[in-house]
Image (spheres, rainbow, N blue to C red):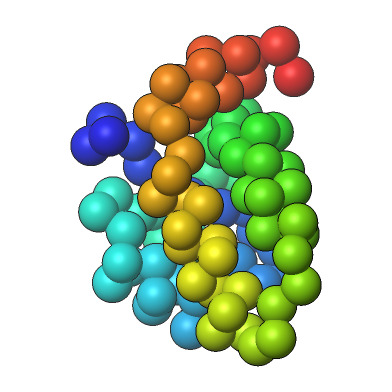
Length: 95
């Protein structure tokens, strides 16, 4: 999946310095906040599918700690199929 760039919107939680540093250090292809185009909701089509998918998967059980939640999110992210991501990207133009 090297053809994808990870980016977020301008929400404060996304532009927070520690979040930016984490993404830069852990994402193969990442656009930092100062590179994001303004008012471009179509830049990140995964907003329409992936985050809801992950939320549904991670909320199936309660988590006793932040670390447990992080582990579940990471597991579900790793288990997400490439076909699901491609389909989400292809259908984003309908939103």
